[in-house]
Image (cartoon, rainbow, N blue to C red; front, side, top):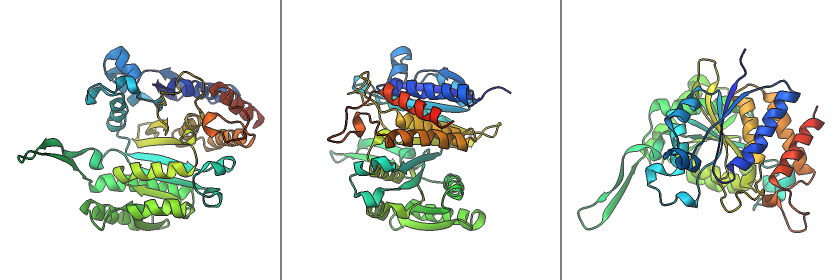
Length: 369
């Protein structure tokens, strides 16, 4: 049988640096665990614009559709700020999400023991935190029509965005959340604004329908999204899996991200419907941006990108044990005090480079054998 295929899109800024360390980890699994992948590399974002005049070429889009999983680094940078909106680097990422129909965005917020002091919240509130936010990614207010800015005939302007959801769009992301909960603590909290939005009423009713008819064994609760934001900073460990729409998921997942202390530690997965081989359409990427201020300096933390590959092992390739091995290696490195600059506190030793962190992760993987 052919090896599973991985399309790597390093992107811009620190993307190529952190992705280099992921490629070393991928090679380790091929050499030490017999888990080989057919890896190809292409361009996205500003790098694609520089070569092709577009943030994502049609050929790269076709390659992404054919791959078993896509790994993406980061897109964007100040060099592209003056481009037309349709040509900005971020449009390449949005095209991947939309055309691959990656409707379920998984954003874990896990606080590693060694980093509990890095959160802005008290240690006892975040220590041991392990929640998953499932964000609907291809509909809602970011894609609804009508949209735009127009004159209001009174000398001013009107900005319009439409919040729109269908039964199918809500039910499929709800199923994704319930399936995840069954692998975890069997508890889902659905968040919306059913008190003021008709789309919120529909969201609550359809999530409840999926629960009652397909997942009655999973505990389900409902919460208004504004209260959810407050509860995330008051008592985040009350949650296991949170499912919410595109807009609220964008906000709540960034809020949850900062509970852990560093964006440099947070991976994500965007999943779609199963392909013919049974694997889901899938894109994995770190939550952090392109960080152009440190690009090319060897200061970037590769852990979020490495952990994104761990998510690929778990959700695309059914290699949960190997994903846990990689996650354990990252946890060991942190417990040993290895730190890139974003993880430093006063009194710590000198930070290590991006490559040094990669070396430490590979050494920890060797120790796991």
